[in-house]
Each structure stands twice: as structure tokens, then as C-alpha cells.
Length: 488
Ligand code: G6P
Image 1 (cartoon, rainbow, N blue to C red):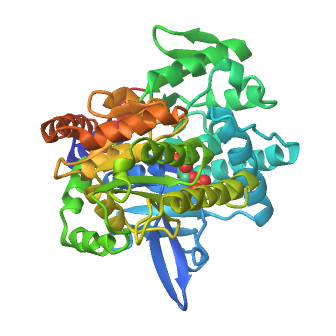
Image 2: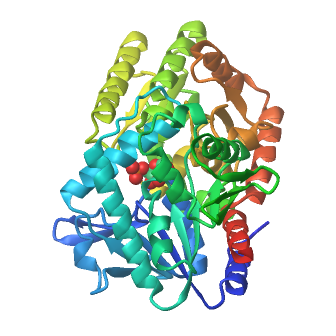
């Protein structure tokens, strides 16, 4: 099993003499005013949680958009702050965007064009010229910040995700010697889906400025290469998994991302988590015997409405579970200035209320919605307490909630119900119960199966899942990317 120390050694061996720079839209830590005090908050997203331990091992510089209202008051003259706050291990360099830039680059092109374009969730992308212009400008800002940090040194630059498709091109124009990798955290669609994008050629050319381009699964690598074949005059090599475009070669590789299995398992056993479990019990409407859980950002790709409909179907089809079953949905709010997200928040609320009204009896009701945001210990408390965790994404690059749930399941008592349209279903099919989230009826049956499964089978499945996730952890993922980079 890869450890943090192994990763540190790999980095020291392979990145000797090079600066290590990561850039992503989201920052791993934000500073927020709480009254007059400033609080440092660890941001919650699969990407930042996965990369934070990697950066702790690597040191280096992480460049990201500043999103906290006290961010400006906590940086030095180079816009940098050392993090994590309790035990600083790396530098966070913040980048400021105006409201107009935030609107065009983040809410606009990133999340209303590329996000729906890449996920097959039947939400139409919106391509606006004004958003695209600002998106390009902000990608230049990121490239400029990276170039500033490179200075006269040699550097490995690791870009993250769909917000930064053009940054590699701008970096390479100035510093062709910099080694640039990009990891795409979401699915890559098939060529038919991608061809509707008016800026497709520029996006592909931007990505093909990277030396290494990583996706979670081989299927997305193939989709990407097929898209290039379809759209550009480039040489794709399916043996080597590479593309040559304008005399530059990009290696295309699958790197299925993992979680800090050991860290999560240890923390799940902590005293703080045990106390959080006690607090949690008081929030769940009694009486109940079975607790089902989902944890997501409220996003149409996550299949939250489909999941609620499946819970409804379950209670209708198997009425013996009324007053015995509670479904707890943690829904973190994000991208709330986009109309589709606003509408979804309302629809989730309305549907949950409707279902609760239908089945409510005495103090008991079946669905608890928590949109208030919960801390790390409460997350782990929920993971440890839930008899089953339902991940019903309509399409997902990997889905790290599935892996976190397993890592926190130290008592081996939980069951994972997992959408077959997630990247993680490719790795976890042996232990999880796979579902098609569009099919409410079979999801309802899967919930019943998870509850009624004999204890020995539950333990056996969970043990398999844990072995898989322990081995393919976050340190191995980062180690593999870095070893591949070093070979360049
Ligand atoms: C997905 C994306 C990440 C993003 C996260 C949170 O996991 O792949 O790049 O940071 O969602 O999205 P948000 O828009 O809230 O930052």
C-alpha cells in the first residue's frame, strides 16, 4: 500500500531541481470572516480533498481562485499564504477575479458550457461568446500566475480540470521547456456529444499543449482520442495512447483517483467522530432501524431527484419499512447563481416534502434534507452510522463519496449502492450493488437488497471494497502521475 512517505520519496527522487506547481479553479483553503474573526475553512470538493494530502507530501505551490471573503486579508505581498493553517506544508497562491470575470468564466463557460457538455445528464450546454472571451482571459491569468512562479527555474506544472483547458497553451507559448500535465476530473463525452461545442478546436488544441493528459478511466481516454480524430488534423496512436498535434506529443493516460484510505479510516475511529455520532442520532426522526445516506453537491448530474423517487417507490413497494427507514441527504449548495441549480434546489425540497407528507406518521418521516453544510467529523459520523450509502449519479468522472464511505466503514457494517454510470463503478463492481439510477423500480429493489443482505455477505462485500480502495489510494494515484511526468 502506498503511503504519504512513499509519495514524498517519489517526489523527491523524480522532481529534484524542479518547482512543483498545481493550478485549479477551487482553492483548498478559504478564509472567511466570522464576525470580526477570520476562520480558515477546508473547502469540500473531491478535487481539493484529494489533492491536499498530495501537496502536503510534495510541498510546492498551489494556484487557485480566491473565493473567501477574508482571503485578501490573509495573503502576503505575493498573494500567498501557507497552508494547512495548523501545520503549514505548502504555499497557496491566490488569484483574484472581478465579479464580471467570475460570472463569465466560472458561472458561465465552465459551468454552463463545459460541465453539461461533458456529462450526459440531458442538460443543454449554453455557449455564449461573452463567456468564452472571459474564460480565455481568465485562463491567461492562471497561465501568468504559473509563469511568475516558474521564474527562471525548471518546473512541473499540474493543471486541474475543465476550468483550465487553455492554460497549458499559454504557458507553453512562453516556456516550451516547462513540463505540463493536466488531469480531467469529469467524464470526457463521446465525439457526437462534443461536436456541438463552437469552440471545440481551440479547447482541444489547448489540451493538446499538455505533455500528459490524465482521465479517470480508459473509456474517457478513448472518447478523447476519438474526439481528436473526429475534429483535428492530428495523429492519434491507440497503441501508445498518444496524440501528435502540430509536432507536439501528448500522452493520454487513465489514472483512477483514490482517497486517503488510511487517514479516513483512522479519523473515523476518533473521539470527535464518536461524539458526532451521538449528536447525529438526535437529528433523525424516530423510530428508525435503517439509515440510508447520500452526500453530494446539489447538482443535476448527481441524480438526487431520481434517488428521492426511488426512495418513494421503495416505501410504496415495501410498506413494512415505513417507520423503520430514514434517508438522510446531505446536499452542499454550489453554483447557486445558475438558474438550473436554483431550480434544482427547489425541486429537491419540494419532492422531499411531498414524500414526507405522503408517509409521515407520528414523529417519523422518511427524508431528512441537510443543506446547511456539515464539517469533516460529521461527514465521517454519517458514513460510519449509515447502513447504506446511495450514490446515484447520472454520470460521474469517478465519485469520491463512494470511496470515502467505504474508507470510513471501519465496522464493516455498511453497503454501497452505486450508479453504474460513475467511474468508480468500474473498480467497485465486486462489492457494491450497482444500479441504473434512471430505473426507480430496480433502485428501490437494490435498497431492499442492501438492507436484507445477510450480515456475512455485507461484511465480505465491504472487506473487498476496502481492500480495493486501500490499495488504490490517493498516494498511489499521485505517485503514478508523477512517475509518468518524470519519464517525460
Ligand atoms: C467537481 C469538479 C471540481 C469542482 C467540484 C466543486 O468535482 O470536478 O473541479 O471543484 O466539482 O464544484 P464547485 O463549482 O462548487 O467548485
